[in-house]
Image (cartoon, rainbow, N blue to C red; front, side):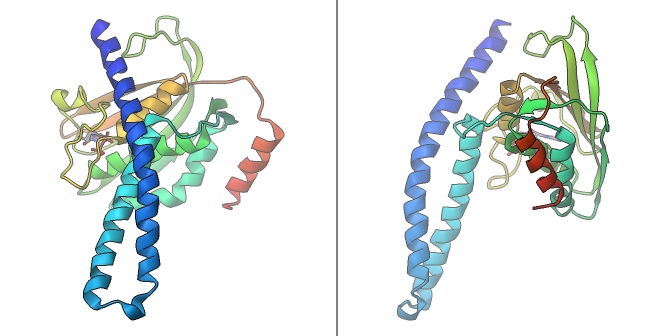
Length: 262
Ligand code: ADP
């Protein structure tokens, strides 16, 4: 247990540090990206070489901005706006985006419990959880395969303990994200939630995806379990506490907006 606590303190400290740095960097990047965009509008007075240089600056600048926004998400500095949400709606809304992201060789199965309980969480952060898990699943299936996203209600028995030794009990919802990809060995599996841990080639992975997922799930009062076997695939199970609070009118309104695809 001591080791687990140390681990979560370490994550906390890294998160705060990363968040602070990312925040300041983001401000500076706004200046860099803004001015290079301004210069590029004045192509008449620029030579080809200068335009090419500026384009390089812009590309690097936008990659850097992408990284800082991931760092910010990870460090949870971004505003958290918990609402009563229906995870099914979040997933349904993402489906159109997931298909092109997964490509043609990955089959997507979405199995949603129509009676799924509501949860209290930030819907934007929930989207991040689903997207990060889906992107990892895709990367684990370069030759194609099957990705299943399932939701259901579960009643956790009093003995249920998270991998960190926290007890969870009562009505929860479970989202299972399962792929038929390459899986992981025990050494990788033990480190996947560490910030900056990645097995992907340089430039592809930041190692922040699952650390972000972990932070969001913890912050929402939930827990996450992983099962994986090399060559056979990986299953993530996200547990989030169900809420009895009814959706308020504004949430309901934005929910139907979302369904209309606005
Ligand atoms: P990144 O995707 O940038 O590498 P993550 O934190 O999202 O960072 O993932 C960390 C590592 O966990 C990945 O590099 C990969 O080795 C492993 N991993 C995560 N999800 C899966 C999966 N579905 N199948 C196999 N390996 C995975």
